[in-house]
Image (tube, rainbow, N blue to C red; front, side):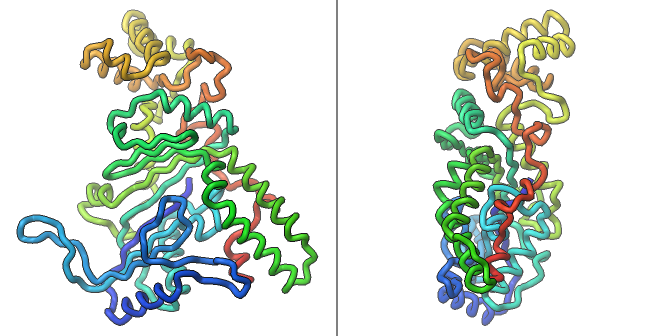
Length: 396
């Protein structure tokens, strides 16, 4: 588990300080080294997407207030700033592996980083309010298995989020009002959005070592080797992100909570619950079954022979046909009652061995939960080709 993009709002700040920050943001749309390499880029617009590596700093002199008609509108307020960035990328230059796992440390890192880059003193990070947190899990799967996973996702129906779902060849996003759930192949995303930037970043480090540390590095060869290692690692990673939005925090806390009030346990619970609900994988406390023999045994043991056999037939139909087709063949109440019975028994109909590919399925036993054996719960291997961070470039 690691945190990626977070969005924080500062307490009220002196007017002159916020005006100064506003001027600094304009002057420092990019922070460059003498070599010309981009270290951090500070800007005041909106982040393009979760892959955006920039740091967003927005000075604000207005805030949302409820008017006499009960409508929210912007009105003059005490000055404050909003900061938003991928803390994972700010720390490491990429988000293929590793990453921060303590939310309070993420908030402190981002606030301290902005303060250092803009040469200002900012309020204690513990007192900032939380408006977005992206929680990510990563799974070690070969690329063909990841492709099969997305093929299986394409066959499924997601009633709560189907209308806004964005499905791609190796990615699927399910936007929502309180959370957004994303599954994507890290290799494809890294190559499209981060490869060139990270390559330049690494090349700059090697160039510095040659010029200032007396190293004799073949820059092109060393850079190519490191980039190939990163791409190879990314090609075997399925990333599952839950973007927790401001409305979710407001629903749970009655307002946007302070950093000091948001625990890692709370954020992890939301991630697990949203992924489980989306994929209908049943309760995580129960081992999920999906193979024919295991399903038959589980249903008979849970519901007895007669009901177990009936639910087994329903499960077989779900495994071989699209859920929309099955819904048309059953009364609405019967369909949802049977589906809930499968969920309560810890039975999954995704990637079962009853499919045409039978036991040849590469993901027949895969479930994107922390209980799965392919869940990456420790940092990537400690090898030289993976050993670099933004600290190397800061030193340069």
